[in-house]
Image (cartoon, helix red, strand yellow):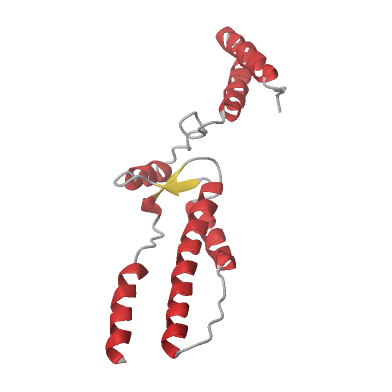
Length: 166
């Protein structure tokens, strides 16, 4: 029995170190709270995705069901953390780029507003942000921005969105 328990433990241990929560692993993709605040909020709520289990049978079956449930809960919590942090304006950085993104945030560089590469399939969000920027510049006296604002306004109205200054 000890041998089976040891084999199960050896199989599970490599899976336990997969989740990291270092800010260097994430990059800011939009406006929202700091990484520490977003991570703490998501961390407090991630337990809500855990599922319970009921197992009746031999001790080996019950132990196997418990281990399977624990692994399923770990996967669900990891997915929840990923999605929660995305909603808060953070995502996992591609390998090797997280440290540079974190350094830019620490240096005080504001996050880039959502662009086409950050909001695929949602040109309306990008157009609204661009329209707002062009509107502010037009009010400041930039005539080229007034033309851009008019062009974007026509595209948005054709899509059923009526842009208006806030």
